[in-house]
Image (cartoon, rainbow over all chains, first blue to last red; front, side, top):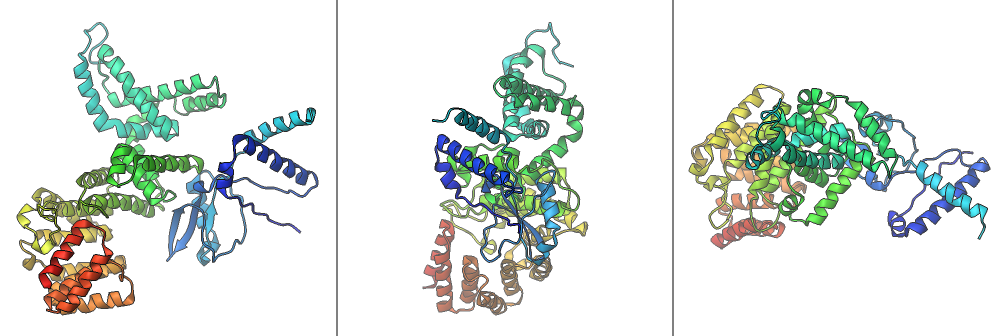
Amino acid sequence: MKYICLGYLEEKVWEAMSENEQKRFIDECLTYDDELRKNGHMVGGEALQGARTATTVRYKSGRLSITDGPFAETKEQLGGIMTLEARDLNHAIHLMSGHPSTRKGGTWEIRPAADLTGLISESEKRRAIVGEKPL
Amino acid sequence: MMEGSPGHTRLPDSQVREVLDKTYTSESRRILATLIRLLGDFDVAEDALHDAFASAAEQWPEEGIPANPRAWLVSTGRFKAIDGMRRHARFDASLDQVADQLEADTADPAVQIDRSIEDDELRLIFTCCHPALSQEARIALTLREVCGLTTEEIAHAFLTTPATLAQRIVRAKAKIRDARIPYQVPTQSELPDRLDAVLHVIYLVFNEGYSASSGQSLTRSDLSGEAIRLGRLVTELLPEPEVTGLLALMLLQESRRTARTSAAGDLILLEDQDRSLWNREHITEGIALVEQALSSRRFGPYTLQAAIAAVHSEAPTAGETDWAQIVGLYDILLRAEPSPVIELNRGVAVAMRDGPQAGLDLIDSIIARGDLADYHLAHSARAELCRRLGKTAEALSSYERALALTQQEPERRFLERRMKELS
């Protein structure tokens, strides 16, 4: 059985952490991800950029509505996720506004994926050092 | 091609300063628009713009004023930005790559500068008014980047602090960068919706200047002037009928600015205005633009509103207004854009054509539906019609309701004056 897991975190909690706390938190998360991956549990995933980068696309009285910010209604329930490859935000909006679900009142929140390459390699370096010289 | 070739005497600083000031006023926004395209980042482009003007102030007295100052400034700004990245690349190697890419992208930007400059201005306007940005951010960004207003000026006009406004702009730029909002003019199929968003921003700026939503003063004419300038710019760049219609609407409303408030700052209704104070130049231009937009047969709500304003402008007195034509135009407008506010205005026009009772019936049915129950102008219009019908008690209670719903000082004084006259 495959499960889709959605991670929620109050952005304030992250912002309130000191740089060292943030680093420690990243390292813990990535270590856990590695473990899940090693055991064949983590099939894929993507980190997201902050909610401020979100754009919401839907149809309102027959017209395409594009708004700034994340999807904030409570009546609708999450129906699925999709990883989309698009040139830029206009292209992404164009592709998702053509999705048949939008004709049934469905809404897509479009959020750019975060590039964690640098962050992961830094964390790997930190964890390698800790591994060499256990405290 | 320099006017004063090397060997010539140094040009006086004052002369160069004058040319630079003029160039800055007329060209800086266009140069910025092109630099954003070439450099791919708002902040980098803004720094490049300032560096380019600083270099001009240093070099032009010695080398003479270039034949094409705009091209010189774009090339210099771009060069300075790439050079700056190379210097910073010592600390951040990824910048070297960015600089390589920027240099390879456009081997000779000066060649395409003149050809695509109009597109660059449109790119800037459409990006600043992108629907993925919040309404507030679109307004702030447009006034800052397209109009070149300072953060302080915009904050003052919108009664907020420069810090709040600066943060709004920083966030908008961050979203453009992080969510990758492209720097482009929308495709033909997206154009109508996206142009609507641009016109909406311009009209919001105009209205904020024409009838400030709160505060002591009824108008902030600088913002209206800025909106009209924007309207002219977009009309030039993209002569669509609705752009022309919006420009006409703004000019016709602006023509009544001095007539719509008394020396004491009190509101004067259209029918009571001294029509000799109306700006004839604005009216002539506005009417010509309305006719141009109407003849396209592809007009929309802005053109229709402008046409209604034009009928008012043509009437020598309120009594001589062609109310039948105004009601007819409201009918078309309602079909194009169903809205309770337009219905309300139509109701007032019907009252003028058929008598106050006919208008009152219409307005009562709109309020009864609940659509405009909290809209102060619905209640003040109702009060006015009741007053004309001699229904004093009803008029008073509607004026009271309107008074409770408005924050704008001149509107409040007007309503209080009316109530005093009645009781």
